[in-house]
Length: 356
Image (cartoon, rainbow, N blue to C red; front, side, top):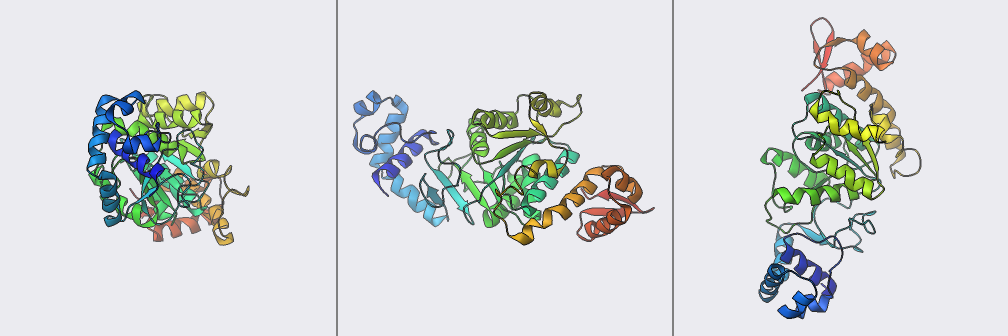
Protein backbone atom coordinates (compact mmCIF):
# COMPACT_ATOMS: atom_id res chain seq x y z
CA UNK A 1 0.00 0.00 0.00
CA UNK A 2 1.46 3.38 -0.99
CA UNK A 3 1.84 6.26 1.43
CA UNK A 4 -1.27 8.15 0.28
CA UNK A 5 -3.53 5.14 0.83
CA UNK A 6 -1.94 4.21 4.12
CA UNK A 7 -2.47 7.80 5.27
CA UNK A 8 -6.14 7.65 4.18
CA UNK A 9 -6.65 4.46 6.17
CA UNK A 10 -4.86 5.85 9.22
CA UNK A 11 -7.01 8.99 9.15
CA UNK A 12 -10.17 6.92 8.79
CA UNK A 13 -9.22 4.86 11.84
CA UNK A 14 -8.36 7.99 13.81
CA UNK A 15 -11.70 9.59 12.98
CA UNK A 16 -13.69 6.37 13.46
CA UNK A 17 -15.09 6.94 9.98
CA UNK A 18 -13.59 8.54 6.92
CA UNK A 19 -13.75 12.26 6.15
CA UNK A 20 -15.33 12.89 2.76
CA UNK A 21 -12.36 14.25 0.90
CA UNK A 22 -8.91 12.85 0.43
CA UNK A 23 -6.54 13.22 3.42
CA UNK A 24 -6.80 16.79 4.74
CA UNK A 25 -3.04 16.82 5.35
CA UNK A 26 -0.04 15.50 3.41
CA UNK A 27 0.50 11.73 3.71
CA UNK A 28 4.02 12.23 5.08
CA UNK A 29 2.60 14.37 7.88
CA UNK A 30 -0.06 11.80 8.76
CA UNK A 31 2.47 8.98 8.75
CA UNK A 32 5.45 10.69 10.41
CA UNK A 33 4.39 14.06 11.80
CA UNK A 34 4.69 14.97 15.47
CA UNK A 35 1.70 15.93 17.64
CA UNK A 36 2.44 19.65 17.32
CA UNK A 37 2.58 19.37 13.52
CA UNK A 38 -0.69 17.45 13.38
CA UNK A 39 -2.40 20.04 15.58
CA UNK A 40 -0.97 22.87 13.50
CA UNK A 41 -2.41 21.18 10.38
CA UNK A 42 -5.89 21.35 11.87
CA UNK A 43 -6.45 17.97 13.55
CA UNK A 44 -8.36 18.12 16.81
CA UNK A 45 -6.41 17.12 19.90
CA UNK A 46 -8.37 13.90 20.43
CA UNK A 47 -7.97 12.86 16.77
CA UNK A 48 -4.26 13.65 16.77
CA UNK A 49 -3.81 11.60 19.93
CA UNK A 50 -5.66 8.63 18.46
CA UNK A 51 -3.70 8.87 15.22
CA UNK A 52 -0.37 8.77 17.05
CA UNK A 53 -1.44 5.75 19.08
CA UNK A 54 -2.76 3.87 16.04
CA UNK A 55 0.34 4.70 14.06
CA UNK A 56 2.66 3.47 16.80
CA UNK A 57 0.69 0.21 17.08
CA UNK A 58 0.81 -0.46 13.32
CA UNK A 59 -2.98 -0.43 13.23
CA UNK A 60 -3.34 0.20 9.47
CA UNK A 61 -1.50 -3.06 8.76
CA UNK A 62 -3.60 -4.90 11.33
CA UNK A 63 -6.79 -3.56 9.75
CA UNK A 64 -5.66 -4.82 6.36
CA UNK A 65 -5.00 -8.25 7.86
CA UNK A 66 -8.45 -8.33 9.49
CA UNK A 67 -10.03 -7.33 6.19
CA UNK A 68 -8.20 -10.06 4.28
CA UNK A 69 -9.31 -12.71 6.81
CA UNK A 70 -12.92 -11.57 6.53
CA UNK A 71 -13.06 -11.40 2.75
CA UNK A 72 -13.24 -7.58 2.83
CA UNK A 73 -11.40 -5.27 0.44
CA UNK A 74 -10.50 -1.63 0.88
CA UNK A 75 -11.24 0.41 -2.22
CA UNK A 76 -9.74 3.78 -2.99
CA UNK A 77 -10.68 6.24 -5.76
CA UNK A 78 -8.86 5.13 -8.88
CA UNK A 79 -9.04 1.42 -8.04
CA UNK A 80 -10.59 -0.71 -10.83
CA UNK A 81 -13.32 -1.94 -8.47
CA UNK A 82 -14.15 1.47 -6.98
CA UNK A 83 -17.82 2.08 -7.89
CA UNK A 84 -18.07 3.79 -11.26
CA UNK A 85 -19.69 7.20 -11.10
CA UNK A 86 -18.76 7.82 -7.47
CA UNK A 87 -15.31 9.28 -8.02
CA UNK A 88 -15.63 12.98 -8.70
CA UNK A 89 -18.90 13.27 -6.77
CA UNK A 90 -18.64 15.85 -3.94
CA UNK A 91 -19.70 13.09 -1.54
CA UNK A 92 -17.04 10.61 -2.69
CA UNK A 93 -15.20 9.20 0.36
CA UNK A 94 -11.47 8.71 0.59
CA UNK A 95 -12.00 4.94 0.81
CA UNK A 96 -14.68 2.28 1.04
CA UNK A 97 -14.81 -1.08 2.77
CA UNK A 98 -16.32 -3.61 0.39
CA UNK A 99 -17.69 -7.13 0.67
CA UNK A 100 -19.37 -8.62 -2.31
CA UNK A 101 -19.49 -10.26 -5.65
CA UNK A 102 -18.33 -7.60 -8.11
CA UNK A 103 -18.28 -3.89 -8.75
CA UNK A 104 -21.88 -2.66 -9.26
CA UNK A 105 -22.55 -1.51 -12.83
CA UNK A 106 -24.22 1.77 -13.82
CA UNK A 107 -26.74 3.28 -13.80
CA UNK A 108 -27.95 2.53 -10.29
CA UNK A 109 -31.16 3.55 -8.55
CA UNK A 110 -31.51 4.16 -4.81
CA UNK A 111 -34.80 3.16 -3.18
CA UNK A 112 -35.21 4.38 0.40
CA UNK A 113 -37.99 4.95 2.89
CA UNK A 114 -39.44 4.48 6.33
CA UNK A 115 -38.46 1.69 8.69
CA UNK A 116 -42.04 1.50 10.00
CA UNK A 117 -43.53 1.48 6.52
CA UNK A 118 -47.00 0.23 5.67
CA UNK A 119 -47.31 -3.21 4.13
CA UNK A 120 -48.70 -1.70 0.95
CA UNK A 121 -45.68 0.57 0.54
CA UNK A 122 -43.30 -2.30 1.37
CA UNK A 123 -44.95 -4.31 -1.42
CA UNK A 124 -44.57 -1.39 -3.80
CA UNK A 125 -40.89 -0.92 -2.86
CA UNK A 126 -40.35 -4.62 -3.48
CA UNK A 127 -41.98 -4.31 -6.90
CA UNK A 128 -39.79 -1.32 -7.73
CA UNK A 129 -36.69 -3.24 -6.69
CA UNK A 130 -37.67 -6.27 -8.73
CA UNK A 131 -38.57 -4.19 -11.77
CA UNK A 132 -35.21 -2.40 -11.63
CA UNK A 133 -33.43 -5.73 -11.33
CA UNK A 134 -35.26 -7.18 -14.34
CA UNK A 135 -34.08 -4.17 -16.34
CA UNK A 136 -30.46 -4.68 -15.30
CA UNK A 137 -30.39 -1.69 -12.92
CA UNK A 138 -28.68 -2.29 -9.54
CA UNK A 139 -30.67 -1.22 -6.46
CA UNK A 140 -28.94 0.80 -3.74
CA UNK A 141 -30.34 1.15 -0.23
CA UNK A 142 -29.36 1.10 3.42
CA UNK A 143 -30.40 -2.44 4.46
CA UNK A 144 -32.67 -1.05 7.19
CA UNK A 145 -35.93 -2.79 7.96
CA UNK A 146 -39.02 -1.57 6.13
CA UNK A 147 -38.65 0.02 2.70
CA UNK A 148 -34.88 -0.57 2.41
CA UNK A 149 -35.19 -4.28 3.10
CA UNK A 150 -38.19 -4.58 0.76
CA UNK A 151 -36.29 -2.90 -2.08
CA UNK A 152 -33.29 -5.18 -1.58
CA UNK A 153 -35.53 -8.25 -1.46
CA UNK A 154 -37.26 -7.20 -4.66
CA UNK A 155 -33.89 -6.80 -6.33
CA UNK A 156 -32.96 -10.32 -5.26
CA UNK A 157 -36.34 -11.61 -6.48
CA UNK A 158 -35.54 -10.13 -9.87
CA UNK A 159 -32.10 -11.75 -9.94
CA UNK A 160 -30.51 -8.32 -9.86
CA UNK A 161 -27.53 -6.66 -8.19
CA UNK A 162 -28.33 -5.29 -4.70
CA UNK A 163 -26.01 -2.66 -3.19
CA UNK A 164 -26.21 -1.96 0.55
CA UNK A 165 -24.48 0.93 2.31
CA UNK A 166 -24.12 0.36 6.05
CA UNK A 167 -23.91 2.66 9.05
CA UNK A 168 -21.56 0.17 10.76
CA UNK A 169 -18.67 -2.06 9.75
CA UNK A 170 -19.36 -4.40 6.82
CA UNK A 171 -18.69 -7.30 9.20
CA UNK A 172 -21.56 -6.24 11.48
CA UNK A 173 -25.25 -7.03 10.93
CA UNK A 174 -27.70 -4.27 11.80
CA UNK A 175 -30.55 -4.56 12.44
CA UNK A 176 -30.50 -8.20 13.50
CA UNK A 177 -33.71 -8.94 11.59
CA UNK A 178 -31.84 -8.38 8.31
CA UNK A 179 -29.23 -11.08 8.96
CA UNK A 180 -30.40 -13.40 6.17
CA UNK A 181 -30.81 -10.48 3.76
CA UNK A 182 -27.34 -9.18 4.69
CA UNK A 183 -25.85 -12.54 3.70
CA UNK A 184 -27.74 -12.64 0.40
CA UNK A 185 -26.66 -9.12 -0.55
CA UNK A 186 -23.04 -9.99 0.21
CA UNK A 187 -23.31 -13.16 -1.89
CA UNK A 188 -25.12 -11.64 -4.88
CA UNK A 189 -24.27 -7.94 -4.77
CA UNK A 190 -22.15 -5.59 -2.68
CA UNK A 191 -21.92 -4.25 0.88
CA UNK A 192 -20.18 -0.90 1.39
CA UNK A 193 -19.21 1.10 4.45
CA UNK A 194 -16.97 4.02 5.32
CA UNK A 195 -16.60 2.71 8.88
CA UNK A 196 -13.75 0.49 10.16
CA UNK A 197 -14.28 -3.22 10.71
CA UNK A 198 -16.10 -3.99 13.93
CA UNK A 199 -17.69 -0.54 14.16
CA UNK A 200 -21.05 -0.72 15.90
CA UNK A 201 -23.98 1.30 14.51
CA UNK A 202 -24.47 4.72 16.06
CA UNK A 203 -27.23 7.26 15.34
CA UNK A 204 -24.72 9.81 14.03
CA UNK A 205 -23.39 7.29 11.48
CA UNK A 206 -26.54 7.21 9.39
CA UNK A 207 -26.58 10.73 7.91
CA UNK A 208 -23.14 9.95 6.44
CA UNK A 209 -24.39 6.55 5.26
CA UNK A 210 -27.35 8.26 3.57
CA UNK A 211 -25.04 10.57 1.63
CA UNK A 212 -23.15 7.59 0.20
CA UNK A 213 -26.47 5.96 -0.79
CA UNK A 214 -27.35 9.10 -2.74
CA UNK A 215 -23.91 9.45 -4.31
CA UNK A 216 -24.01 5.89 -5.68
CA UNK A 217 -27.27 6.43 -7.58
CA UNK A 218 -28.34 7.98 -10.86
CA UNK A 219 -31.72 8.67 -9.26
CA UNK A 220 -33.12 8.41 -5.74
CA UNK A 221 -36.67 7.22 -5.05
CA UNK A 222 -38.25 7.93 -1.67
CA UNK A 223 -41.16 5.54 -1.13
CA UNK A 224 -42.49 6.58 2.27
CA UNK A 225 -40.96 9.10 4.67
CA UNK A 226 -41.82 11.64 7.33
CA UNK A 227 -40.54 15.17 6.91
CA UNK A 228 -37.56 14.85 9.28
CA UNK A 229 -36.52 11.29 8.38
CA UNK A 230 -33.23 9.82 7.25
CA UNK A 231 -34.77 9.17 3.84
CA UNK A 232 -35.33 12.89 3.44
CA UNK A 233 -31.67 13.50 4.28
CA UNK A 234 -30.80 11.09 1.46
CA UNK A 235 -33.04 13.09 -0.88
CA UNK A 236 -31.44 16.37 0.19
CA UNK A 237 -27.95 14.94 -0.37
CA UNK A 238 -29.00 13.85 -3.86
CA UNK A 239 -30.42 17.26 -4.69
CA UNK A 240 -27.22 18.93 -3.48
CA UNK A 241 -25.30 16.85 -6.04
CA UNK A 242 -27.75 17.32 -8.89
CA UNK A 243 -29.01 13.73 -8.68
CA UNK A 244 -32.61 13.14 -9.80
CA UNK A 245 -35.06 12.66 -6.92
CA UNK A 246 -38.45 10.91 -7.24
CA UNK A 247 -41.12 10.11 -4.66
CA UNK A 248 -44.15 7.88 -4.25
CA UNK A 249 -47.21 9.94 -3.26
CA UNK A 250 -49.27 9.00 -0.22
CA UNK A 251 -52.40 10.00 1.65
CA UNK A 252 -52.19 13.62 2.87
CA UNK A 253 -53.20 12.58 6.41
CA UNK A 254 -50.47 9.94 6.66
CA UNK A 255 -47.45 11.25 8.65
CA UNK A 256 -45.21 8.91 6.64
CA UNK A 257 -46.36 10.55 3.41
CA UNK A 258 -45.61 14.14 4.39
CA UNK A 259 -42.00 13.94 3.32
CA UNK A 260 -42.71 12.30 -0.03
CA UNK A 261 -45.67 14.57 -0.78
CA UNK A 262 -43.54 17.61 0.03
CA UNK A 263 -40.84 16.37 -2.35
CA UNK A 264 -43.43 16.06 -5.12
CA UNK A 265 -44.81 19.50 -4.35
CA UNK A 266 -41.28 20.88 -4.64
CA UNK A 267 -40.69 19.29 -8.03
CA UNK A 268 -39.76 15.62 -7.47
CA UNK A 269 -41.07 13.27 -10.16
CA UNK A 270 -43.98 11.16 -8.83
CA UNK A 271 -43.61 7.37 -9.10
CA UNK A 272 -46.97 5.69 -9.68
CA UNK A 273 -45.74 2.44 -11.25
CA UNK A 274 -42.39 0.75 -11.99
CA UNK A 275 -42.30 2.19 -15.51
CA UNK A 276 -42.11 5.70 -14.03
CA UNK A 277 -38.89 4.69 -12.30
CA UNK A 278 -37.27 2.96 -15.25
CA UNK A 279 -38.28 4.99 -18.32
CA UNK A 280 -35.48 7.56 -17.92
CA UNK A 281 -32.90 4.77 -17.37
CA UNK A 282 -33.92 2.07 -19.85
CA UNK A 283 -33.83 2.34 -23.61
CA UNK A 284 -31.52 5.35 -23.88
CA UNK A 285 -28.24 3.49 -23.90
CA UNK A 286 -27.61 3.81 -20.17
CA UNK A 287 -28.37 0.26 -19.09
CA UNK A 288 -25.69 -2.22 -20.15
CA UNK A 289 -27.93 -5.27 -20.24
CA UNK A 290 -28.09 -8.21 -22.61
CA UNK A 291 -30.87 -8.22 -25.20
CA UNK A 292 -32.80 -11.03 -23.44
CA UNK A 293 -32.89 -8.93 -20.27
CA UNK A 294 -34.05 -5.88 -22.21
CA UNK A 295 -37.06 -7.90 -23.36
CA UNK A 296 -38.15 -8.73 -19.81
CA UNK A 297 -39.29 -5.41 -18.33
CA UNK A 298 -42.45 -5.20 -20.50
CA UNK A 299 -43.80 -8.42 -19.06
CA UNK A 300 -42.68 -7.54 -15.57
CA UNK A 301 -44.21 -4.06 -15.67
CA UNK A 302 -47.58 -5.62 -16.53
CA UNK A 303 -47.17 -7.97 -13.55
CA UNK A 304 -46.27 -5.01 -11.35
CA UNK A 305 -49.34 -3.07 -12.53
CA UNK A 306 -51.51 -6.06 -11.64
CA UNK A 307 -49.98 -6.50 -8.19
CA UNK A 308 -50.20 -2.78 -7.48
CA UNK A 309 -53.99 -2.91 -7.90
CA UNK A 310 -54.34 -5.76 -5.39
CA UNK A 311 -54.38 -4.37 -1.88
CA UNK A 312 -55.51 -5.92 1.37
CA UNK A 313 -59.03 -6.34 -0.05
CA UNK A 314 -59.26 -9.35 -2.42
CA UNK A 315 -60.33 -8.47 -5.97
CA UNK A 316 -61.77 -10.41 -8.88
CA UNK A 317 -59.78 -10.71 -12.09
CA UNK A 318 -62.29 -8.44 -13.86
CA UNK A 319 -61.78 -5.69 -11.27
CA UNK A 320 -58.00 -6.01 -11.51
CA UNK A 321 -58.11 -5.84 -15.31
CA UNK A 322 -60.25 -2.70 -15.24
CA UNK A 323 -58.05 -0.97 -12.66
CA UNK A 324 -54.79 -1.94 -14.42
CA UNK A 325 -56.22 -1.13 -17.87
CA UNK A 326 -55.14 -4.48 -19.27
CA UNK A 327 -57.07 -7.10 -21.28
CA UNK A 328 -58.88 -9.60 -19.05
CA UNK A 329 -57.32 -12.62 -20.79
CA UNK A 330 -53.85 -11.22 -20.22
CA UNK A 331 -54.61 -10.52 -16.55
CA UNK A 332 -55.95 -14.03 -15.97
CA UNK A 333 -52.83 -15.53 -17.56
CA UNK A 334 -50.51 -13.38 -15.48
CA UNK A 335 -52.45 -14.02 -12.27
CA UNK A 336 -51.93 -17.74 -12.81
CA UNK A 337 -48.20 -17.21 -13.32
CA UNK A 338 -47.96 -14.97 -10.25
CA UNK A 339 -49.86 -17.56 -8.24
CA UNK A 340 -47.44 -20.30 -9.31
CA UNK A 341 -44.53 -18.04 -8.36
CA UNK A 342 -46.02 -17.57 -4.90
CA UNK A 343 -46.57 -13.83 -5.31
CA UNK A 344 -50.37 -13.85 -5.51
CA UNK A 345 -52.89 -15.94 -3.56
CA UNK A 346 -56.18 -17.15 -5.05
CA UNK A 347 -59.12 -17.21 -2.64
CA UNK A 348 -62.56 -18.82 -2.87
CA UNK A 349 -64.83 -17.02 -5.28
CA UNK A 350 -61.98 -16.49 -7.79
CA UNK A 351 -60.65 -13.54 -5.81
CA UNK A 352 -56.96 -12.63 -5.64
CA UNK A 353 -54.70 -10.87 -3.20
CA UNK A 354 -50.97 -10.30 -2.83
CA UNK A 355 -49.14 -12.65 -0.50
CA UNK A 356 -47.81 -10.75 2.54
